[in-house]
Length: 107
Image 1 (tube, rainbow, N blue to C red):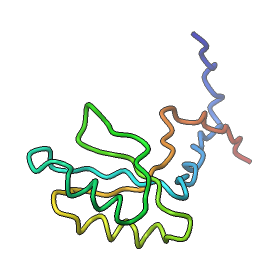
Image 2: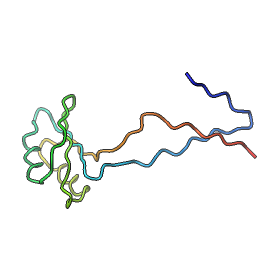
Image 3: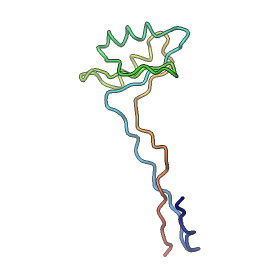
Image 4: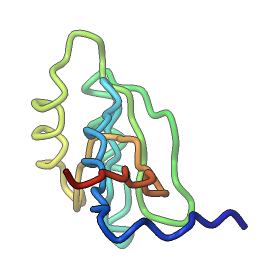
């Protein structure tokens, strides 16, 4: 394990700002009520001309790719209205590890 030495007493530790959220331009993750099933959702995906790119097994959700001519926010609103849909989120990159803080020496 690599450990940094303690900073000198006149040093302030400054954490970098979190990276800006990075979203996929055309992908939505749609969570649905397992008891109601996904039939209505899958029909809505087909009607919207979207493509199912993944069906999650552990959670009740699917990932879809919307058509090139569709607006991602409008698509999100559209799928939120589908019977049985619980939540619609844009697909995004999540950072699991914090970046190392910068060390800034006081003047």
